Image (cartoon, rainbow, N blue to C red; front, side, top):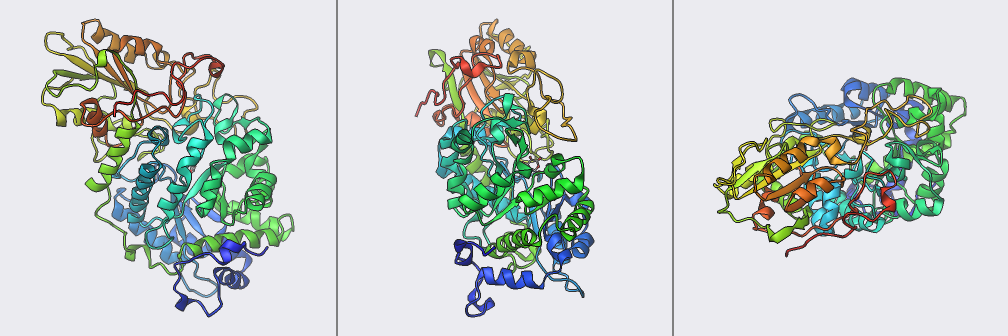
Length: 616
Ligand code: GLC
């Protein structure tokens, strides 16, 4: 299939000297493709996880890309270890031994709120908080910093932005969604992609919009569940945010685990090929999600052929990539997957690498931003701190308790008052996140931020020392502890809802809890608030969490209540606003529920979409 107009004529960083007079990127891709063996072509379609593939494997099997899953880091997880790892993989991919064709490898990570796998990275608020800023320019600046820290580690590709439009707060990935409204998600998409990809030169990283399509619309918010809606609703709610991303030159899209009306997206030819690549003209590549192909059929070879024929171009395989490669080879040799589909997939992969200027980039260790000393530095953290400030939503402020005076005798309490792990949430150092300060190098907890601004503050996470004679006011920082994906689901049932998703390999991750009521999930939080309030000390409650939860009792016991979401490493940004250095700016990008009923969206919310007491 000829490459699309814009790929053939797209601007490129490749100096004309490296191309013959009339050679275009598409002609370069076709010329390369014509020289490739089947093994080299299928190798380009494999994306194993780093722990399952050595540099020798990259060389011997012509692997096109490698990824780090959440929490998968080389060596001591220092920036230099990442650069060294990528340099070794790249060198192996460029080996020119007989029978090899040097095609540079791409390395990919989930830098979804900063390059947060890496110790010491600048960790930004998760998307739900960024959505409450309603500030696409700020979010683009944040995305640019995230990309720069990705480049510092020699990595080429980030699986961001997430363009999910989460419709049910029971979903464990709600915090990866900017908003429940497609137009709000769409407002961030183009700026984010442009900030990450730049001009696809030395300063650019390949972006990946995910997950196509309908990830945020599953029944009961079951992760990887079934999105049972009309095509019109699927298009209006879940496809809309992709349009500006595609217009911005998005290079990759990740297929979604969910099903649409019972059919898995990973095997959905209509959604992956007819709509995304056909009607919308997407000329980049589609990457599967983590072993997402496995769920299509109990026979792995059949599943692989279903995915390839549906339009998956790159197979993200956590461990069994050699089996995947062997079975895909078999499916091609048997004609189950036509060579024309393989050539289309490889053309797309080569096209992305050529547009990214990958063939002209030096080895990772020699690239301009590798080992950049600005990684995790103050300048980057200041951008994150600004994002934290603007993400905060003031839900209650009786007697205008906030902002607090720096002269006030402030008691800081609550399980998340001094816990940078809790602030960061999932996809931070570990896939499921961390629960300590030690695990998050750099940054400030909320307590550390308050302490830096006022000497009169004291920390007692239990709140037991609260005393109206000694304390004028208490800040109680509570909420959720970190989680990711299905382990963040709130499900009345057990591990997996029947019929929610998979053909095989039932999703066995245990959910976070059974209800959206915080007092049921973490009763100690309410206990801390009420015990302090009972002593006549006014309470400012700060909610750390990945979604709005039912907090009626906590709200009633608090004189002021702030939604801080998952602010990331820069807790100082919370202190900046609580103590009045900056105003409250944020407004809800999700309606805030009044009840924990499964049908909560049929009732009036406690606070509507767009609510927030703005003070400046
Ligand atoms: C995960 C997520 C996806 C992520 C991928 C690689 O399962 O669904 O968002 O990019 O695997 O970590």
